[in-house]
Length: 448
Image (cartoon, rainbow, N blue to C red; front, side, top):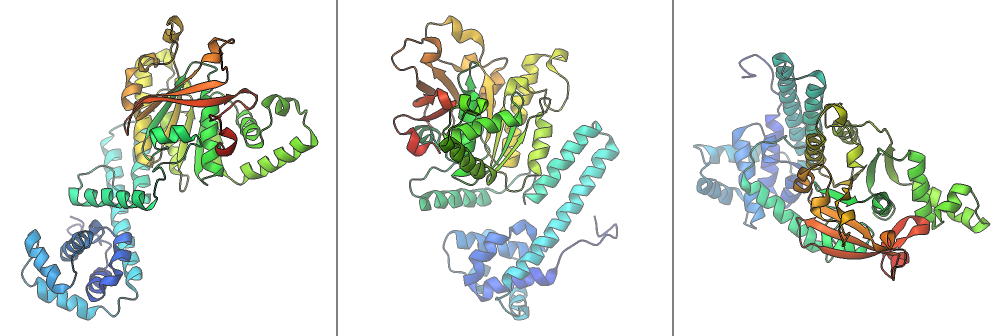
């Protein structure tokens, strides 16, 4: 269509042929090329078919040379007349395989330009059709551009062969890491063993009654991920100010009671500790927004602009405005609003390909029960939260209800839902002076 309209399509036949020729001349460069290029980044069909065949043969450990590739193309049903002479010509025209990554960069650049043009056409079409309000179209346009920046398509059917290869790559990474959990560690070892860390594209819900420590456990996870793992974190606080959050992070990092930090009554050693903690925190990449009227769409838009984002934390769900609409709950059903927000948070986790931790209030239903431990049915307003979340963690402290209990500082993280494995209860230590959680009996070793 572009050719019929007289528009020049961005591609480089020479660069595509040089990549194919390099792979056939020197199979040792194949792993590097496969790491940089995808088959659909080739514009010319012959080059794309050859590349896909080499990709499949490499994945299954087959010998790769011009003869075996041609034979495999016949097996795959993509062989065309004169393809053997085409491959011979490609090899003859390739000056050297030493520059294959430079050839690959040209192919990838042209592919990105083509996709950018296609995306611009799609956006123009949406605007021309008037298929939504300006804010809705802007959100859709940002999503498409972000997908381009991340090197992937929005939706679309993918052949299973490519997906199988992705699964194998993930398995190889897991095997190479030994016993290390696949996700971002929370710093709470027993919890990590249950949920396998905070994994990409997951929506993780931390639910509890007020005062149980929802914000505290989220800050625990943020501090460990930023300081120990060097992760980039976006925090959206709809309840507490930036300064309040940072004060609590300093209390945790310096192991100074929150009360002392608030009153400024610090010993010389505590001043030294707080100075060290401040330097440590300043070196991390934690970004905080305390705008109380943010929607999921606005959060998502901010996150798209953060390079190499690793984790999103939202505190908390019931304070959020309805997804995308900007209307408050007084104008619409709370149940529908929470359902919309829940669904958009899961979409955000998938689109950004990072774990999203969302804190949520529980209803008062548990207050009337003898056993006040949280249940999935206690989630306020909507069953959609339960459906969309990959992991649901309920927090419970017996000492909150019973001051005379045997161990008032024993806390429970109850895994109410876990798509990756089993549910159950993880015991944690509650450290009230630092408003923090730690591992039972070994919190001072593993928490930070």
